[in-house]
Length: 159
Image (cartoon, rainbow, N blue to C red):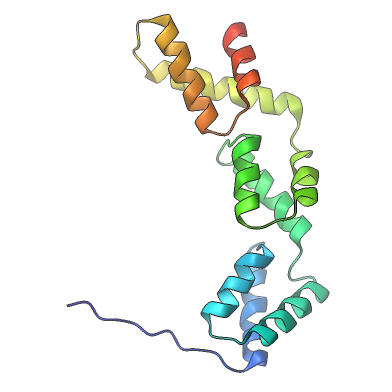
């Protein structure tokens, strides 16, 4: 038998604001993540929008700063490509203009080097004898990591 936990609902906007400030101070958050969290806590829509406005005003919440942090984190830590990062930001409902601005911060040479490293590392773990199948599998792998197919083809030709 599973025990259901009922999270305490927050009805006081001041308590909600304090909790939201702590939530945003812990790490960068997208507006939509904070909005969803506030609704999960049981706050009313008018209070949620008021709190969001307050967080933005006091610089706890900044979409551009979040987009930059997301791009840097996913590229440097997870080695994601631009396509996958862009999809992640769209999922978090970050405006396209901010997505483009944040993606420009990725250095082109570093991006190509990372793609080359990913392909070489994956190739070392594969034992495919047919060169066409190997190339196809490497291309699919790099595409699943969010890299552009034309860049992948260039790296595979060079390597």
